[in-house]
Length: 188
Image 1 (cartoon, helix red, strand yellow):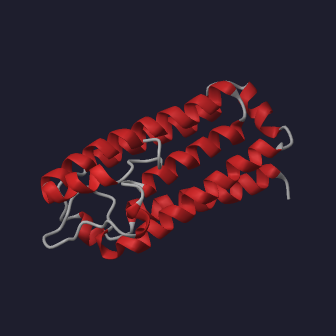
Image 2: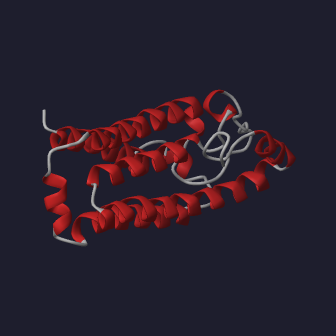
């Protein structure tokens, strides 16, 4: 199987999973949550990064068609990692997971499993996935757009979510933040 085909198969799963989460998963809960705007802002940055990476320069398409070297397979592996971790986060949160920011009455602050080490495991995985996408593009301008624009959108979404979590869970969330890494263990 060519590297490009492998990449597109993984990309279809990644995008398909995100479309499912965005449009179909827990719609009843999303309707009850407070903040809805940040998902559209994050989506705009993600789409700008992905489409900008392929349309900004015609040479990027030629670079993409070059046979895959090991670093590009590492990029695809990071994309697979992103999908798998996001899947496990959604499963771990169960009915609490929604694409909109907020908490329902009686909802618990999750600090176990994946959340024991990282405050935002799904977002960390998404950023790793976009780093993988940048490695796959293997073209400086495309790679920069594919990584920096989506990461900017994700960081904005994290700020909105953290503000909400501090408001909803108060001191419990602040204490949790003191004991847990934000996105990258032992770094940030």
